[in-house]
Length: 96
Image (cartoon, rainbow, N blue to C red; front, side):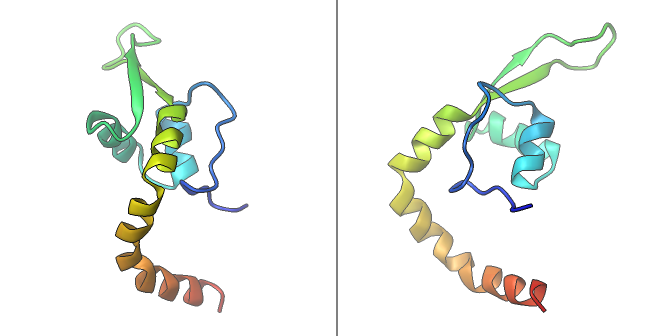
């Protein structure tokens, strides 16, 4: 299965859970929550599903993120270029 990236992700649902977004982007669930708190992802907190739960659940709406990616595409590419040598080295070692 190909890893989903910001450039090849296509929203198939109106909203996603924290767990689903973490699986899509191969990051931890706390990272997704941090992204929401920092405004990188649009998410709304809903009441807990079960009585006694410590916190509610986020619904994450990917359309805003996808729209922003299109608007800032060239800036994102330029900022990410500094990571390309490291990523390339990782890719090469994975293919061996």
